[in-house]
Length: 171
Picture (spheres, rainbow, N blue to C red):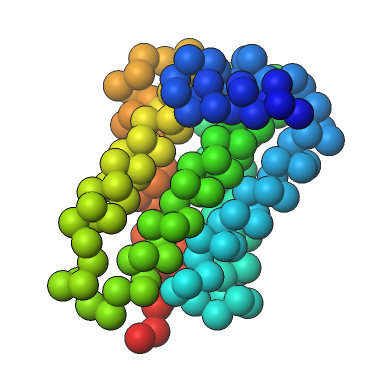
């Protein structure tokens, strides 16, 4: 297990790619379950439990659809298992890093109470997350990093828009 954590950590540091992970349905199932759990935990401060779970399931479905579509279009479906394992595993690690930041953001009663440091770390984490997804895409479909960044940003914007449309936040 520590070997897998090292690989996911290295993926997050852009030192390894999805090809470095084993092809395993069991591992994929476990890491997708972890992704679902962490996504729910990250969403909980802003939504009731049932809605947070629905958002997490929607987020996971979008991730699956994005990866499968991209790999299908490029003729690389054989890489689906490792790509999803890399995306979900790195998502779990980055989501765990995001938890205290999300808590801090929701605990502040208004924008004036949010510390600059928390906002800065949030922006850095979001940017790093986009870069990690771009790195994984780059390896999965054999494109340059700028193309991976473009696809990562496009995916993130579409996913955010769809989730905020389906699950508007009620204050």
